[in-house]
Length: 297
Image 1 (cartoon, one colour):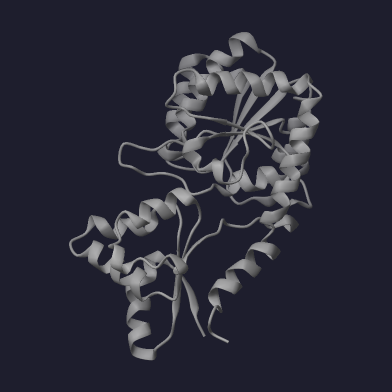
Image 2 (cartoon, one colour; image 1 turned 90 degrees about the vertical axis):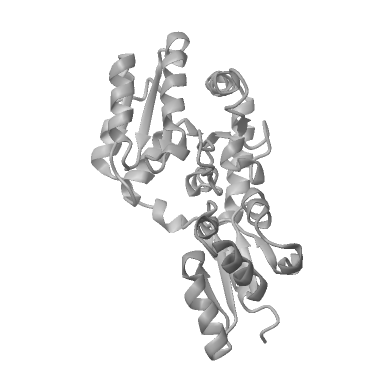
């Protein structure tokens, strides 16, 4: 029986295969497998892991491409390579946090814009705060929710205070709280996924918050650097921007705000909901099992 393992366990599982002749499948998210290349002999080990695997899974086309750059042609078997996103647990969105919902209901006269994720550099929240500062000058009826946890929370607070936009920004310091997350999705008008590529080359896979936003039928504004192109068709089920292109983030942000009063918004949300339905874990898990048990009946 094959075993599905994270890339951080690849040394152990390579040994297990040799000792017990057990096939293994590994998955890589956000370039985590490439950490091996930072160590002496790591690239050779990564090549061995890929070569000897039963199959391997990347969570986006870009992650697959980055992995392939470090693998010798003779070790890369296209038939083993699979692209499969994470899934969404629809059951987690059944109950709200009453206290948070009450707080957010007081903003019902605002356009609520939310970021959901870890407070780390590659998420691009600093860019979001800077752009939001400019957005407020033209659209003062907006409120930004920054939801999550992480080491950069102090940096975010500094920027918010520096721009003097504290009345229009709330930091909701929570992680993996399904009820609070449900409340945020319910009241949010626009979800922003502002991911960047850091100077160290760190990038996203396809963020789970992006998949959850589609699943909840929300208008998503996502950077191409988040690999959102794998799931979003621009102007059909969401909006895409390239933060490296001058003013692109700001212009697409404005477009999302102006869409709030346009009939087209309903169609985009319907398309988002339709797309999001395919990322239910029931469906995604079936795809994983097909890979796990391929040629092992």
